[in-house]
Length: 581
View 1 (cartoon, helix red, strand yellow):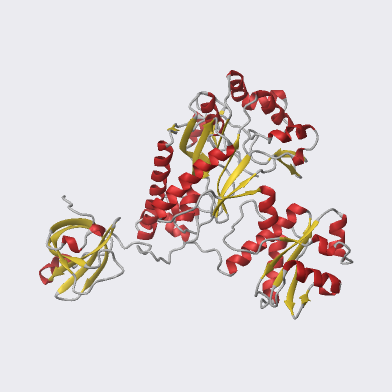
View 2 (cartoon, one colour):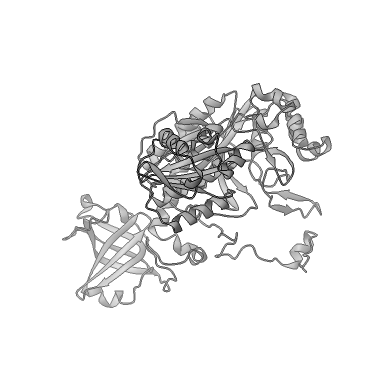
């Protein structure tokens, strides 16, 4: 078959030309003497006009039939402003059916009423919807723009193994049994972390990869079992130099893919600043409602909740929402439940009116404390205050969650507004109540701040890392760090994390051995590529920008994976299934 043009490319400049088109029937309208068909391909829709001589030949044509037409481009009498091809149509001279189609179980249009699992079951039909094709085409453009930038900066694209060694990296591994080594398993990579550092030891200096990664963890709207990250590693660059290059790349992507000029350098916040101001290490700064420390206001409080907090060396913080005092008690109860889900014992709320407050804790406050709050926060009538008193981390986290929820309610998270920033100077370690020991905040290969290295022997909680995250609209787009390149320091970090010399050798022997042969200073980061595509395509779920994703239960409704396998395959792999009692 011959095709002269794509359907969505025809314009007034093509009037009078003979064209041959192919595609899917999106809509058919029969007006007796004239029959209209909207023909769709991935570039768009073009209107076809059939005269009455085609009545018999077109009578059985239905939506989603694949057809070939030939005809002449003509100007439409009434233009359709909703279509890029809306000023022209094709006067059909001949056509034939390439393939027929059953009635589809979902509507092939931008708007569909199908449930997500139905869409995923018939994903090949769901992906015919123009809105879905636009998302995946945008994903491709983002990848092209990133590759073009990295190639232009002398980065080398190198693939690393999919079948590797199981190493502790924070999530559960997907394991692959070895047929030729009974009882032994490969692990699918959670990330190429060790390999990309080895590539720096190998002397490549600048590496990148669109790496497939696998993590056996619970799913959510922005997480999948198998996903893509843009993995980047460099040698001999400082933290700021790495960040500056990544800013340049994202500025290029935003310009080429979204047509938006983004200013660099991006805002930089330390971890402590981000938590103190926004209650999150991935802050959304498109709106206000910043956290305010009001501990000093209640230094002499008799309110037991606040008093107990201060005696336990906690803090008291508030968020102030202008013109929000109209909310109902039911609304407040919902916010209180959200606070409790995030670890708060409760939530103090105050409504401002006539120079005073009403609310749950007003009777426990002195007039002096009310006056001090008004002065410190510049409180206005109809303002609403939400106050949490607890340990610093929990207080910040709770108010951060409330801040985001209220902003969503008020429609302040605009999908067409984009705000980038960096969060830097993360803690090196965090205390695990479950394990009763310190664990790595990022991963055990992160370099501590040079000035904090002495604290490794005295105060692990105070050690900061050369770690940084790039944030967009409250999402972590990517995270990275400068890496440890000294063998003794790396061994010390492993030991702090509770590994014996034997465990270090068993889990990371090949890696630490490589450090003995001249390791350059190096660092990098990894972008969550699916998440970037989700945000830039203004989608609500990461599943919308992955061609064949898993559902929330980590299953593929289309292929039904995961599924049982033939017992003979299991026998070959020396595996037996033990039924749960």
